[in-house]
Image (cartoon, rainbow, N blue to C red):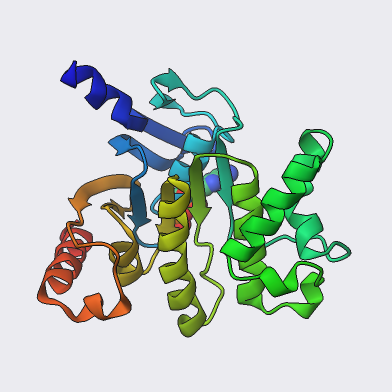
Length: 257
Ligand code: ADP
């Protein structure tokens, strides 16, 4: 009984996952093994080119693995699926649509928009702090606000696995820290399982329940570090000895390979 409960708790798994490009000449990812628990927040951290985005795209089903297997809810990922949604560094909002209309875009693509969909989109815009900007156009919003719209749009899909590829990477540090704090609140409120790519070690630890430390040549998950810091977390936690021990652990893993 308890064993079953344990298996059900794992949402995404990788078994010896490998990915090569350019007829096998570029090894983007080698032998990745991991299990991601339901509702957990996983950060993928590592230098540029170590396979972070590749791992995310493999989980999303956008690209197939060359070897090994990625499973979601114990079934192999064979292509994009409705319970997985992805967000990128650029908000990619449609300039001629309001925040609300941008958030409703995935619903519109999937079919007709109901009143319930509209109400949900309004609620999500409130959740991301844009209750007063529902009818604003992207040009009227700052970069951080545009990413908030993109986050609401991500949540509007109803996906419970969220893949985020450096979503706040293009924003100034102050805005990024604020959005990170809010992101933690939001994903725990909606109960989503989140994979978050970053090359910022502190950000990776601050957000996560687990940090996948990735190294390059070839790209691999060199170490999985559990982050047992209490939640909710505030930015000041970054000055604690526990936090700094985790930073040292990540740095050592990155430097040791
Ligand atoms: P990261 O996200 O950590 O910066 P990526 O996953 O984007 O790294 O890339 C890992 C490696 O795979 C890099 O060497 C990159 O150049 C290569 N790569 C990624 N996508 C492709 C592709 N479509 N064609 C060829 N090489 C690729």
